Each structure stands twice: as C-alpha cells, then as structure tokens.
Length: 306
Image 1 (cartoon, rainbow, N blue to C red):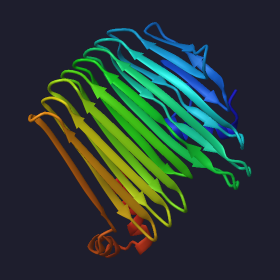
Image 2: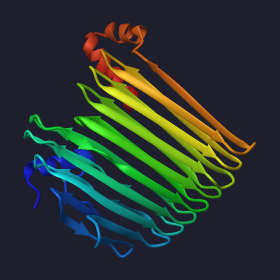
Image 3: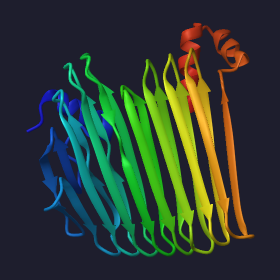
Image 4: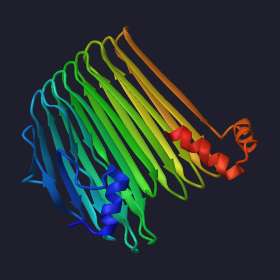
C-alpha cells in the first residue's frame, strides 16, 4: 500500500489520483508496489537486473501503460532497467516518471535505463515527468537514459518534463531510425537554486525519408546551470531539426551545443538556438494589466513552458 506522501507524488508525476485503467507497474522505494497486466500488455519482472519487461502485442490500439517510480526514503539509490517491446501496427501511450521526496540528509538517486524496440508502423507516445521535493539537505538526483530502436514506418513522440525540485540530472537519449520512421521530442525544463541539468539527444537517421524533430524549452533561474546537446546524424535522404529555446534569469548559465552530421547530399538538417532574458515589453504589458513584476514573470514562464 502507498502512504500519503507516495500517493501525492504519484499525482505529481503521473496525474494519477487512483489506480489507472489498463496496464501498470508502480515502483516505490526500490520494490514493486502494484502491478496490473491486460490481454494485450504483459509486464514481467527481470531476472538478472532490477526492472521490468513490457510486451505489447501487435495491433494493440488505444491502450496505456503507467510505470511511475517513487522514492520517499532518504539515502536510497537505485538503477532500474526497463525494456519495451512494441508490436507492429500498435498505437499506445506510455506514462513514466519519477518523484523523489527527500526529507533527510543523505542523497537519494534514481537512474533509469529504458530501451524501446518499436515495431513496423507502430506508434507510441512516451511521457516522462521528473519531480523532486522535501525539506532535507540530501540531494534529489535523477539520471534517465533512453534508447530507442525504430523499425520502418514507426512513429515515436516523447514528452520530457522536469519543472521543479531536482538537484542534478543527466538525461541521455539515443534513437536510431529506419525507413520512413519519425521521432518527435519535446523537452520542458526549469532549474533553480544551484541545480544542474544536462540533456543529451542523439538521433541517427539511417532509413530513407526518416525524420527527427527535437525541441527543448527551458528556464534557468538563480545560480542554476543547464547544458543542452543536440546531435542529429543524417545518413540518407532525411529531415532533422533541433531547437533550444531558453529563458535565462538572475545568475544562471545556459549552454547549447549543436552538432549536425550530414553524410548524404539529400540530408536536410537544421539547428536553431535562442537564449535570452524575458523581454521588458512583455513585463510592462502584463504589469499595465495590474500584475506585479513577479506575477508577470511567472505568467510568462508558465506560458513559455506550457
């Protein structure tokens, strides 16, 4: 059974007020707290490592899998391995995410390694939300690694969200795409205090007419630091786009490192980056409507990260 803190964290990272419909596996403080499988989605514990294998039958439509992780014990550190096998012609949503509540003096850390094997013409939407909280001196650390193998005609949409409370994170994402496969990544990130966040995205476009679109929107406040790496490799006729759009505030630092590697004359690769402070005219416009400067800043940031 989940306690009150764990239930509240579950709402934060997965928008779950009760146990979800469909398949799910809820991990709390290093162990499986609840699990449910369906006729089309099977979840099995790994035998050699902490983690699970998720098998989605070919042709599965309009079903979801929830696999949230919650840490509420200070000092707990774990690495979990989850593998997803998505059958051909399926169309599913996968809701992941991790919440750490650390009220102690020891660091708490969750490192997740997710591998996706996406079948021909399959479609998945993957949502991963990270949240940290707690009034202890121990840090909240999360290092997610995502590896995606896409077969012909498959489509993967990834929503990566980290808005508050995570002291340190290194997010590493690699995808390789075959003929006609497409990848969309949307990252939303905010850091504050002395937090540090590094995001590394690599898309390898191996199949003709494959495509990748990676966009990061972030806000860096106080003395926090963000580093964004975007690496798109075009090995054939393909389309790739990477974009970093960041608001910098106070004494924060933001670094954007693009890399485009075109190995074919028909590879069309684009990178865009914009880093700057909130425009003064935006603040003035909202303040003329009765908002304080702080309220106006929050309105602009909320809209930017939506």
